[in-house]
Length: 447
Image (tube, rainbow, N blue to C red; front, top):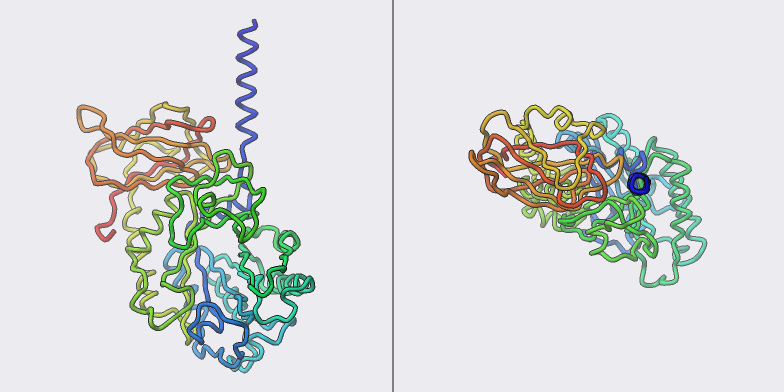
């Protein structure tokens, strides 16, 4: 009787621990499968050939005579991107919409005789082509006289309110903690900013070093951690105040679900510079970034900056097209057979595995492959800490590759092998594993 009682307690405790694990909110669960999203860095810097403006730029220099947001969003749509985030205001303080809070905006530029609104054109194009829409509003403002005083927080919130109420649904609001050297005492009211977003756009995720919904990956090189947990402990963290290595890896014991977003630019800089037209990342390079971000339980936020005419440049367009073409070619055919639960592209249907329980994956016939995709049902948390894959060589099981965290998606790359079946083991896990998807592929020759 005592043995049965103790066993029952263990089962109840295990169930409690599983239920106590951090899980994504509905907004986070909708965000992660987007996989690839785009940043649009565009402001007066585009015309001054700078990365950071100083706030003294005249609105008269902003005149993208051929601006076509539909060209941007159409190209992103065709490249498989699911959201576009516009730099509504960068550190220079120049607003790409006719803000009522300042004269330092497009309303005093020659573009469209001061009647233009870049934010509106992007949001309208996103709606037309079916992309989600996001905004970045820099807390650091090198133009506004109130910056550095308590009154600035009210100014900032007023601008944030304009963006959140005049452009339809906003799916991501991007914050950073950059701060002017001349205003070290400036305290950003992030709690107030975030509360305003929750009030006006409750379905939007918010990005910063500390979340609350999405965290920085810790670098701008396009690399999520080889081990990347969606959980961290946010206590003591703030935008601009965080350990980049901690953010890159996450925390297996983290109490908050704050998945990583990998932000990187298609060019060496974040804003357009003609001198970088020959330095645009190739489609093959972007594919590698996809493996290092999406393939490591992150999301790829790729910056594609419009040029001075207000268009994506030809090198960028060609690279985006090649990127999508390669990915489509690689992941077109899943070689896995007889595993309907693991190949239906639905995270909510899964196979439950315990540690070191082998899962045999049949291919139906001998095939050559060099890529494997593994996904967990993250709706119930992230459990896998490590695992391994083996392949059948006709007479024995041979080691193929080991891996650490999985989460939303883990992509494995290895030299091509031929086999009729594989075997998957989960070596270590935080509770029973809900394995949602498995894919086996042969990479495009252009990778």
